[in-house]
Length: 98
Image (cartoon, rainbow, N blue to C red; front, side, top):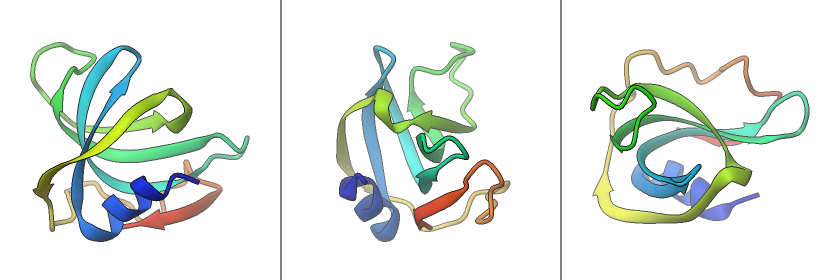
């Protein structure tokens, strides 16, 4: 388990990390495992590279094993985003959630 991710969720800290060779800036909401035991982070991406490459951001799920250099950026979030589901069915078990 990655305690940095749980600390960020607990404290409402926005995180930055490298994912598949690109920087992502994310409000983290749920961290746990899927049915196969793969660790996942569900968050709202607010900056960095996005798949559409059009500066539109949305909810995304990230495989934790593909994330590197996870760090706080010194900014907080304190609201649940529209579309947040604390019982997200993608997760079999949850380490921590907002």
